[in-house]
Amino acid sequence: MKIAQITDLHLDDFLAQHYQVDTRGNFASALTDVTRRGITDVVLTGDLGELSSQAWLIETLNRSGVKPLLILGNHDAVDDFRTLPLTAADVRPDGLYYPRLLGGLPCLFLDSSVGTVGELQLRWLEAQLAQASGPLAVFVHHPLLDCGATADRLYALTNRDRVRDVLAASGREVAVFCGHYHFHGGDVRTHGRITQHVTPSTLLQFQRTGESVTLDTKAIGYRIIDLSPEGVRTEVISLG
Image (cartoon, rainbow, N blue to C red; front, top):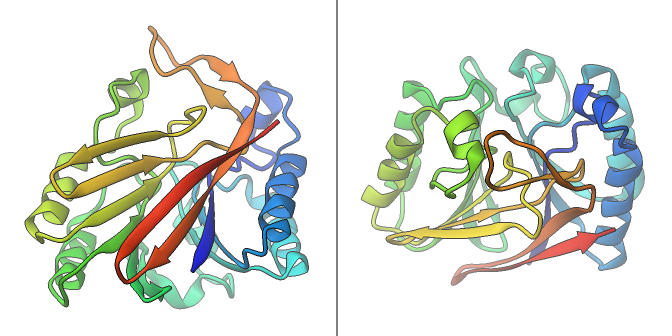
């Protein structure tokens, strides 16, 4: 089963305005490319944009005919998604996180929107990991493994090592799909049986190293993920 991961949309937000990026147009271009390839399942992994853009986003997804799932990033607020039909059933008191079975592969969708993964969510994660053996996929906005980048020093998930250790302790093969760092071409890191895939943004990309996070390119991208009970295969698609 092939799905698409689109991340860091930043629809109409301050970054879109600062860099003068048509984020609605960028997202629409990515979604058009996804549907052209016959992919009908799309995961949005956070930093979706201003609340005022939410209706446009849902209308665009509905019009495209895709089946969307979404999680939240550090620029999103869970309270904005408590009554949204797409997410309401999966919102818990401490965040938006939930399991799904896609292509026969267990998938866990985490909430790192407050910059950490809280204790309730960690206990839920441990319980989910204990339910079975075999490979699984985890979708989370923030990277869990250090990428050797400026963003690791400035904007990392505060308890990423704890989350990583919970995943590692399961003994399972885990594919992590995230965004947040806006890396041109994406990034792949491994830690034991964990493989992390950082996906480019549909806003723009930032330099990996330097004193501060600065613009690399306005090229955009997304990721195709092929899910099966045996594991995953994946590739980054660059646009523009």
